[in-house]
Image (cartoon, rainbow, N blue to C red; front, side, top):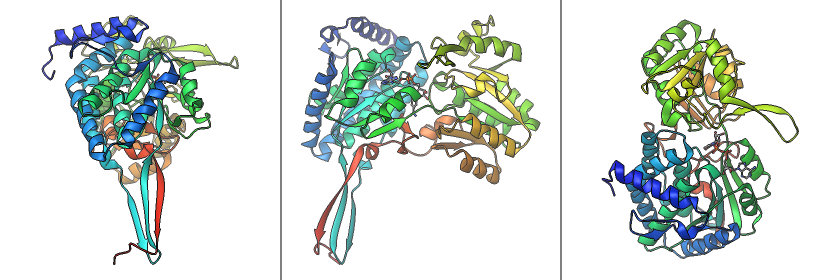
Length: 480
Ligand code: NAD
């Protein structure tokens, strides 16, 4: 599997997509890794939850060593099949970059914490011993996005299983095949490592209705939602314990002490990673006026294409469309046909033909420009000129819209760096590096694809999916 050829990858992808056109799980087999049916995929959410509960009971009965053996196998299969999931994800959703998606899967396999993240605490004193342990919740209901679909399924599965939970997924309707491929991968890993055949579950056709069954089902003890503001709001108002990983609009400040050539390169690398789909990716730049030209020219040397304000206005009409909300209020939302698309494909929509080497569209913009204010999730990067650090911080904080998600800065002035970090209050703050350093890709620390700003768990890991339990032994077991 490690040396799978491109032709074989395409064959598997086409097989999986063809089979999944059928709405019956009976047809969801794949012959690539030996004929078998996709495991753990249900037509009814109630059945999926029941099966996930059986998986949970099996995990409860396991030793930590057994859980870790399953996780080790998930990591191995994820590395081995990263190229398949990358190709499948791009083919199914039409979004992102195959090579970047492959790297994201490897990152998940290598840097998602396992059972080592679950740590017990003991306190002893004159009154004896008190133990605090991180216990599982039970069955976790997880809603996953279209932007990092299988990455989120695998990352969540590793953390949730490490914590001793069962999991049922309601994947994004635009990314069912790749999400369910990942669910099946986790189940194959479980079986191969001596765990239950069905450890995690999902839906043939996940919908808002199946999500709402999940949200009100008595067996679901924790909801984890990774997605845009609508779905996070819905889950947080469910009445259950919920972890919300919501939208961002990460600003970048570049001041005149930064290494401008490096800043230009890092920003373009971060902004274009998987065509800007990661919620942490650079979305708008605030550049000191005295270095803005130099920054733009550094970006142009790194695959950016500069459009003028008239072209930007035309593009804005295409990448943002008007939609009425349920109160009849018209608001701008991103055009799904443009999300995660290549820069040359987006430029072609306004009649500009460029080569595939162009990976980012940049433009100068005012603070009020739609490109600055909206989370586009495509390789378009507006640059706003600012006079000084006060103005840069004020505007960058406003553009982040209080999401408290992610912000970036390129500077060598520690006062500037500290001031912005304090003011913006984001879960992730990256200094002098591309955005992905913030999730452990070229930066220290573990990875996650569920960054829970609104509910405060932050860079989630196994311990985020636990509840604390205390066990007290009065007057004994202090051995000093
Ligand atoms: P989305 O918001 O379109 O959908 C997410 C999931 O929620 C899907 O399964 C969808 O069907 C479902 N859904 C949507 N509204 C729902 C509702 N009211 N009730 C139940 N289910 C509902 O997400 P997307 O377009 O795939 O992802 C993009 C958004 O997610 C961006 O805003 C991005 O910033 C955010 N995101 C955040 C993180 C994070 O870790 N904080 C990670 C990835 C994506």
